[in-house]
Each structure stands twice: as C-alpha cells, then as structure tokens.
Amino acid sequence: MTRRASLISFCLGILLLIGACSAGGSSPVTPDNNQNPTKYASSINGAAYKGGGPVPGTNIYVYNLDTMKLDNSAIAGTDGAFSVGVNAGQYLIFAFGRDCWRSPELTGDFSSYVNVDADQTYRLDIDLTDDLPAGEELVFGFVTSAENELSISGATITGGGRSTTSDGYGFYAMAVPAGTGDFNIVADGFYALNTNIRDGQAAGDDYFSTPFFNLNPANTSGSSFMGIARDVANGTGLGGVRVTLLMPGNTSWVPRVFLTNLGGEYRFFNLMEGIYRLNFERPGYYSVPLDGLVIKDQDDSIINVFLHRDLADTANIDGYVSKSGTMVYISGVRVTASNPLLGTYQSNTSPFGYYRLEGLVPDNYTITVVAASAGVSYYESSSTFQTVFGGENRFDFALRFIDEGVLRGNVTINGVPYSDAYPPTGVEISAEKVGGALSGVQFKTNTDYMGKFAFNGLPMGIYKVIGRAEYSTTEVYSGVLYNIPVNSGQTTSIDLDLVS
Image 1 (cartoon, helix red, strand yellow):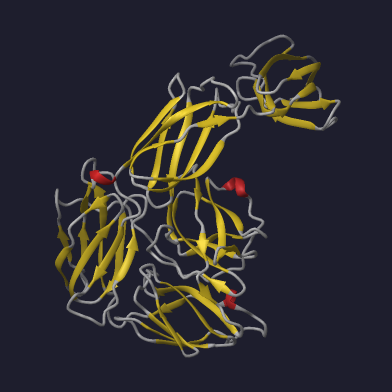
Image 2 (cartoon, rainbow, N blue to C red):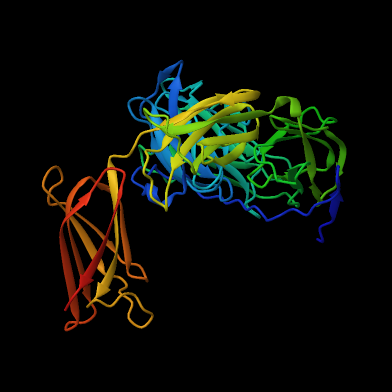
C-alpha cells in the first residue's frame, strides 16, 4: 500500500526531518563491568540512593535509544556511587537493586532519559523509589513491532496478576511474583501476544533472560508523528524537550511522552487513526499546544515546532580561575557547564582569568574546569556539581598545580633531522625513572611522522631516556641520555640522536 504523507507547519514553516532513527529488538544481557572506559567519549557519574541512604550493588543499565540495545552497565559501590561510560547520543538509564528499583520516567529534575554530548562528564543521581518485596522479581525490556522493529508505546503488559504500560520508547518494567512465566501483551493495531518467558530456560534463570516482546501488526503498521523542536531565535534543535501526545476525544487512550534527542528530534510510531494534540515542554521555553491534528491510517505526519525562550527565566554564570593559594589568574582555561537534558555551555577564560556563560536554563549542572597549554594540562582539572539559579551566578575556581611534568623532544639519526626522504618515524622512546618512588619503571612512546615525541604527565624525578629504531636486521640505531630532570608542572625539552 502506498503510504500518504501529510506535512503540518507551525510558526516559521515546514522543515524537513533530519536523519532517521531506528529501533532494534535484541534481548537484555548480563552486566559487563569490565568494559574498557577509554573507548567512551563521555561519562555519567552519580549515586543510587533510597530514603537518603546509599544503595550498594545497584545495577545501572544504559540502553542506547537508537538501537534499543544495552550499551554499557555498572554496579554502584558501597557508597552508592557509580560511573558509566557513554558516547554521544540518547540513552535510557535504568537502575535496580536487590530489593528496590527506579521506574524510568520523563519527568522530574533528573530524568531517566538523557542526552549526551561528546567529551563531557554528567551528574545523574537516582532515587530508587520502587520497592521489590521479598518473593518478587523484576521483568523489563522493550516492546517493538515485528515488522519494522520500531518501539510500541502504550502497550499493556500483564503477568502474575500485575500490569503495566510501555512508555514513549516502548520500555516497560514491573515487579511480579517470582517464577511468573506467562505474559500477555496487547497494543492497538497489533495482534495480542501470549508467551511464557520460562519456556526453554534452565532452572534458576532470572530476569536477565527476559526477552523483549515483539508484536505482529494486525493488517497495518500504523501511522506516525515525527518532527524537530527548535529554538525560534537561532533555529537550533533543542534536546530535552518533553513532547506529549494526547487524544482528547478518547479517554481510554494513554498519553505518550517522548524526549527529544540532541538534534531536537521526536517520533511517535504505530498510531491509530484519530485527532491528536501535541504539547511541547522544556525549562526556559514556552510554546502553544497543537490541537486538532488529524491522522489517517498509514499517514506519516512531519510536525516541526519552534519554541520561544522565556527571557524572564534564564541564568548566567561568570567568575575567575586562579592558581590555588595565589592571586595569579590563568588564561585560556576551558569552563564547561553540562546538563544531560539541557545541553552544554562552554567558555574560555580571558588573559585576566575571567569567563562568562550566558543563556542557561536554571537547573543543576556539572561544571568542569580544564587548564591546558599546547595540549598539556599543567593544572589539576576541577569538576563540581552546582545548582544554577535564574539571573547571575558567580563561581570562582582555584586550580592546584599538578605534581607531574612533561618530557618532549626531537629525534635525529646520525645527526640528520627530519626530512621527507629520511623521517625518523616510529622510533621507540623509553623514559626510565632513576631513584626514588617508581625507580626502574619505564614509560614508553613512539615518535610521530616528524620525529617528535612527548610524555605528558611524568612523575617528577630524574630519568634515563633511550631511543631505538630497527629498520632491518642490519639497520639498527640507538641512543641514550642520562640524568634528565622532570619537574612539577614544567616541560623539559631534549634532542636525542641515534647512531648505528
């Protein structure tokens, strides 16, 4: 059947939807807490607590909302603290402990659905508000369409005398009596699914083996609303906008909520025919609901909306960055304020150490301060969690000098420096600490395509520097320098010549 597409404009006109979001229906997996954190561009740090006290051993699951797959996981320590690596994108953070859990939601100061920028550190504390009584276990996952793997929101999942509804991303979670196997899943436009999740499982399997539910369409794959929420002042896509879809004429229809991603995109799939209303909400902005939105069977409606800033409810941050214990101000310091729902704001300090961030939405932010020179940090970075109020906010930072130094240099071979015809590339350089703590420990690197090398962050002390290049069994070059000092917060430059 040829699908009809209706385009509905609002405010400044129609904009084409940028990109396409896909959903998958893979099964949950057991947490892997040994994943290499260096492969992730950002991180989410926080604490899991209940009633003001920490909940050690809380499982933190991070689902990628593009793929509907588990992207990473962590387990909270004895103090309830956790840290989990993520890349740029949109995620569902699902947390559960032995006897309590947190039902994901799209409301509150700390949503369980977060937007992540690259190279940022975020703070997300999780209050485990839902009890898991003795004799019960947790089942959770996504409900998707077997035809296109798109999420199904508003599906009713029933099992063990309990019932819940999948949210705007098709995610559900509920506590059921231990050993419950039979589940019934019902959604408009789909055939009901009756399944036993225990079939084929060995005794003792738990909720990690719970499959995601895939429903077959009943003669239709449904209709959709999708679009982009933008700032009317500059056209920027707005992440963290809560988009609520309602059907005012159908009181039994459960409203669906979706959180826009970093580009401001939202989507509602698998919809029935009817007349709908869309509400758009984001702190610091206001908009008018869109009423009377008619959708027919097989329609794909693109609705782009522009939100206006509430200028009476914005915040600014400024302050100075200095060297700890002195009045010496540091220039070129990067100051970043990040919130997983409201975005990232960044500024660099002036020659007088002054920075200013403007136009923030009042909320809680992680503020990170990094002082760098030629790619080398001489000062210990600072990270703090602050509540930013409407109007002016003043935050000064004093950075401590790092108790490490930098060793860098150039390599020549038989006195010949870098040239296109004879580049000392890939030379192995070892810096061995001599005496004191870490004596005998070797730090290694290789020269770049111009014969340069650098050790950033060496412990202060005296070093022996060794270079070796082996181009063939008969063409081997080496060199060594003794008593090279590395001082706290300083750069030592050397020239190392290799001879055959």
